Amino acid sequence: MTNPAGGRRTIEVDADVYEVLASTATTRNTDVNGALRYLIEVPPVPAARTDNEDE
Image (cartoon, rainbow, N blue to C red; front, side, top):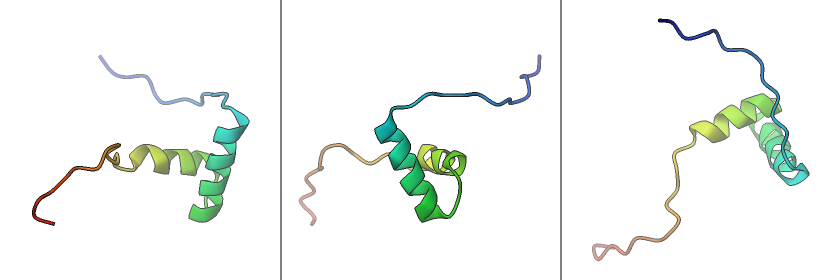
């Protein structure tokens, strides 16, 4: 069984989300789709600080 080829999809986002995508696109010298791909690939950042006694 093979996966179907990727196609174009439209996703509606809030204006604030679009502003973040547009700003990231400008900073990365790409379009909104490239910014979205970049943000998806960024490794997650921990939400809470971890206390490390070695530091």
